[in-house]
Each structure stands twice: as structure tokens, then as C-alpha cells.
Length: 181
Image (cartoon, rainbow, N blue to C red; front, side, top):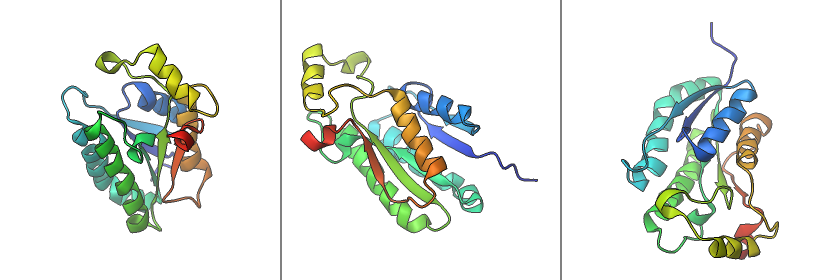
């Protein structure tokens, strides 16, 4: 007997936005399967584009059977690249294109959408940015603040749970930042 509990496969769910999304969906009654590979060990293309592609492809029979949905975590910089981050931006642009392609190719059985965060969590480790640069980003953000990881998790949950007639969309959750890039 097939379970009626929805299942989410989340890549990069060990920390940051993926972790918050996994907890949020689990709290909403979803079974959550996580996939994580060290960012240090993988190049941007492998982490941000290849992993979602191959995992989606592997899950496709179950997604079609359950009339499931895919929500890819993209980035506002997929459309307007961030200086000095060409591989990251290219990998996220590729994921945006994959999202739109799959929305066409997998319909009507599978819905495919994306969420593009803006300033939610500042970079960690070697990529830390200084306070002045953070403030310059917030000055160009109409809501004048960072978002919360729950904003991203909620948007993903909306697309998975509450938007059965939405496919092929990439929702910017950025406080309006993409208006001023």
C-alpha cells in the first residue's frame, strides 16, 4: 500500500536554507530525504546544477506516479550575476534554465518551480562580507532588511503544498532587491 505522506528530497539540507526548509516541511507533515555533499569537495556546477539534475532524474518515476513537484533553490544572482562569482552564478543560471525546461517537459504529471533568495543569510567562511557591503545591499532592498530562512522555507512549502496550478515559475524572495540590481 502506497503512503499518502508527501516526500521531499532536499539537496544541501545539512545547513543554512536547506536545513531550515527540511525542518519546515517536516513540521508540516512531509517525509524529508536529504542529500548533502561538502561544498569544499564539489565544484559549484556539481553542487548547484548536476546534483539537482541527477537526483530529479532518479526520482522522476515516483514523481510522475505521485503527481509530485520539484522546487529548486536558485538565487537572484542567476539573472543578474554577482561580480567575481562567475561559476556560482553560472551554476544557478543553469538551474533556473533546468527548472523552466522541466516545467515544460514534465507537465502535466510533475510541477517544477524555483525560489530565488535575496539577502537571507550572509555568506560564511571565506566568503564573509563586511558590514558596509551588507548595508549597501540593504540600502537597495525596498524592505530594508534581510529576510529569514523561514521566508524561503515558507515559499517552498507554498509552491509544494498550496499552489497546485503553478508551474514554471521562479519566485524571488528578496525583499524587492531584484528591483534595484
